Amino acid sequence: MKRLLLVAPLSKSSLMGGNFFFRMPCLGLLKVAALTPPGWQVTIVDEKVERLDPTHEADLVGITTMTTTAPRAYELADHFRRRGVKVVLGGMHASCLPEEAGEHCDSVVIGEAEGLWERLLRDFELGALQPVYRHDGERPPLVRLPRPDWEIYRTKNYLPVHFVETTRGCPIGCEFCAVTSAFGGTYRSRPQEDVLTELQALRPFEGPFTLDRCVFFVDDNIVSNRGYAREFLSRIADLKLHWFGQASVNIASDPEILRLCQRSGCAGLFLGFETLSPETLAAVGKRVNRPNQYYDVVQKIHDHGIGIDGSFVFGFDTDDAGVFDRTLEFVTRAKLEVAYFSILTPYPGTRLHHRLAEEERIL
Image (cartoon, rainbow, N blue to C red; front, side, top):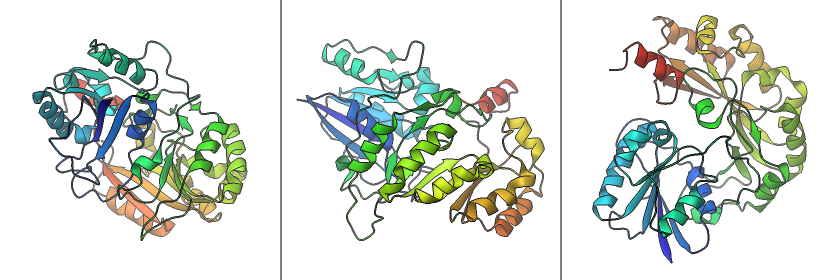
């Protein structure tokens, strides 16, 4: 039996560094494991929650990359290749910079793994591993996806929450966000029966800290397709979930959707307010946001018993020294449950990176 090692690296510092305390499960590698056919022994090591044994025996190593973890990913890839082990790199960073990633591995998977991973493993077994695997033409449909086996994560000391996906893609295309380039500018939805079957099969985590039937929907906008969302939220209402998700601020303009979120067990939503400046929002392409409506948005969501994790970005060209005080005042007056602040960063794969590179502003 062939041995496959899948690794989620942890950078030595920064957002995804050693002080990163959100012990969230790595859904991407769990999906890759589900795509792996019988005949492979699969081991997943996530450095957020466990130590990687550098002497781990494997026939093939797959490492997922984000920009913040890429240096550590390359370090691990070089290590295993020195041992004579074939290494595959994938994930957001490797997909955006395959030439860079290719210097540290035997093969790069560009984009989504569905439809590529199975072919890569067949080529590996034939001794014909290709340097690059990418989709030709359309993105893969989200039908008949194999169900992730959460038992693999049973003892990994993650926070007791299951990650579930219903859609991919986003048409908004904010300048600083890589989602549209990575997953497309249209929404692709999974068949609802598949998602319901997956939800019904989830088994509560055990331990001193448990959250019964706690699910995080990883979609970038859980209510992106309003027709799909209405039907889906109605169907999961009887599952007694406590769920969290991400949504655009215009969810507040749909009272029916808010009622369905409440009835189906929505405990909190992550909203990208980004900035209080209309000028900045227009510059980055997030025209669905209207800062003069933010207080009303918060009030309507709170009226349905749903908490808000508000996300804000500092460092736009239009920001001035007063941006911090204005943002803090809004967070306090609006009584957001959680506020998340980030520094504008030109990640590869974003229009922001392309623009700043052309302007020779990336040092």
